[in-house]
Image (tube, rainbow, N blue to C red; front, top):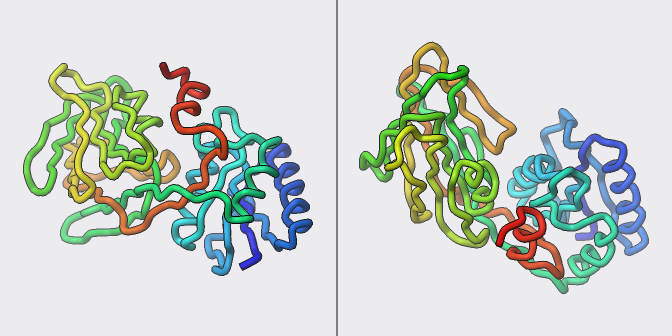
Length: 272
């Protein structure tokens, strides 16, 4: 396959970088299609060899969901402010893409999570996500309650601002800000993190990948909101249940060709 999908943040800098990458690909004999991340287009043809995301971490998460459905690997070129997932800077792109296209680089297989909403007797599949599924309060200065069950067993009753179920990739996002641990991104585990719990005994919990996590928010007056990857979401109703499991899909990610995960942690998060 000689075709590449370029998934681009809708900003002047990102669009310019995408055009430069498009010319680079053409010089190497590849065809490419450029799609803005804000496009309403939701159907993508198959047959691509690679997705190149040009933007920040939010653009990368949106692109990763598409790439996982298409079964193709993804690589991120940073045109955002933080760029933790889009590890490769614009001036590094030709070298990194050359290694990828010539077969000198191998992608990492990242765990994703599947989210379901149970409302009454109906269970609705919400999607597969690379970072996290979050239930938080939607009203100012109110404590919310979430009961958590793992594999059918009652686990914890959280009083606080909500609960996060995260992948290892998402452990350095909202979960980290809420006091969760950093998990190596290629690990096979799920992470449960209470958000601002009002008791010292509510601590983060690392779970095996075959866990079925059920979140039961105690809802009053639409005070709970469900968010997936920080980009999709909805208000929850009384009696709703959110079910999270490891997805059958994996996200294939090409990382920085010369910096390992710990160097990215030190450089981007000031870790260590």
